[in-house]
Image (cartoon, rainbow, N blue to C red; front, top):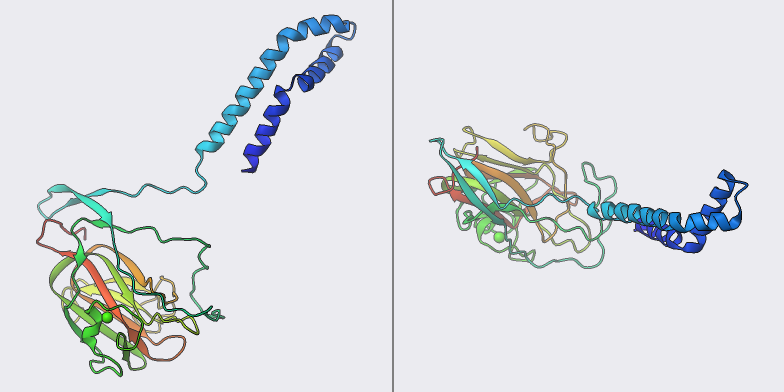
Length: 304
Ligand SMILES: [Ca+2]
């Protein structure tokens, strides 16, 4: 760190008797021009150690203060949260990191850069790692094997049950290809859940070019027609192509890491995912959706 190096250099110079001696003698000669060199030397023998000690102590304190400031402020991850149920009873819920089993990365070489792609976030800094998401202890993927409904229930490739079959690989036999235009799939969790995270993978085999899916919208609701208690949890339809409102979320490049949405314990039974083609063709692809939650009538109660 540059500031530390500079301060250490100053400390060395100040603690050097020669430098302090010359400086102090010059100052004393200016203040008392008629004083002899021997007299000044006698007086300075008592002054120099005090000046040097004070200077070193001040600089050491400055270094200590500088060290106490972290390079990047990282607020500590909460290990628990207090939730209140409908009876106004509060309880503390232990939080644990969300653990995701990622599929293999399917990339060959460097994908072509995305030129002119709207609504993209700035590129991540080298070495950036996504911080773990904290969810209540006991939360599991409650979407696995659940009933699926879709706007296109006879896909071009694959079958809609593959949305929740646990296979996340981007290989032949693992992905679904829906028709062009806006399509949606809906998962019926079977009963109301508190939902803490949703993860999803479109087609993430970026062998030749980065792939971005458009108008990705994720919602939950209490009913299959999405009329009651509808919550929009993600929406990157920045220009309202779908007519469901302008989304403030960013487009993103598909990778084996998928997309993770923090859903803050929202309550619902049905989870719906929209998309509207991608940057390479008008088709829609899907590999897997996971919904991490707990039934509402379990120990964990909803926040909203
Ligand atoms: Ca799958």
